[in-house]
Length: 466
Image (cartoon, rainbow, N blue to C red; front, side):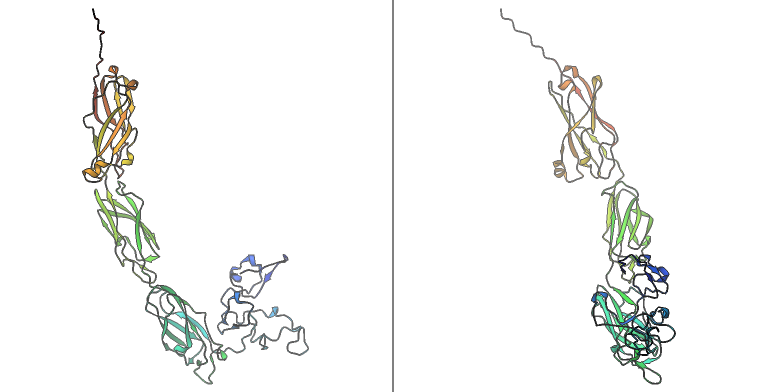
């Protein structure tokens, strides 16, 4: 609702029906001051129109017999009859006529709106859902309640207002009476949408006792479109499983999330089918559930959700989830092997050596780098090795990702090149935590092996010719 105050005056609203105001019981103070007696409900016009159609002469803003605006106005707020509408010469009396020229007040209290209901004719009190909502049922039912016994009620008196995939739904049967009637409707077996049952007064519904009186007092005046709405849902919910851990993993336990495409009910821990793991910490509601999987042993850990274990609010059972699986590996990789190191060459400025990594699953190549290995030797020599190359081709040659991984490292000799002063035993050590497998298990610090430097100095004596 929007009420505009252009001059800053204090606005007090009394005995009015203002959409979105909250009514006097929950008044929105941004609209002005509440003077009491205000409503925020459907006025139940005979033929309502959207405000965006104004100005217009179409529609029918007279009140239906069950309107909450009946007798809800304020007699004290009726304007004076300054135009002398009834011609009695009294221009200081309250307004005597409504917009139709009928008496402005019938009974004790004036109605809200421009028209006063003159006679309490037979009318529809309500059209309510008779079944659960939302629903995926092929047939639904509405309960139509009149204020008194009526006859002539049949399928021709009703119309369906539908949305979405329910366009094309049809009215089935009308039964019961004379005051309360049941109307069945055949839904469309696909998609989603809504169905509302409206009564369209064509003059055939009349009182069952005494003189026949038309619904609403006159033909066309008894229509009703303020009933309850069914939400029809034939869409089967889907569910996906996800986790934040990599594959393979050494995490235990690890969290899995089951996400449904819509709110579901009836989903419990017992609906999980788990391989090589136990389930704990199951929580969730609506569309999202989480739980923890604790692997029982190294190997494949898997979880499935079968079809039909949960239903949406309309009763549609879920589709089966695509299996989520992770390979669990808690075993540290095998320490690398140092094949026979090369013999250092006198004067060489670098020294390279190759190590072979292997693991039941896979060494993570991205964990290899400078500083994985340290070389220690005589005279306090201690240097981090530089990674030169990883031989990925060896895996393709030897049969895939689980084949050994060969890597070459290099150091710079003491003093920048090898000479006899560097002779001695050198030890190659793996730094703890430097290399890991793809599950995250690291290799502990270990000595890979040694190489010996045994260089000789060459002496050249000058040749003397006599």
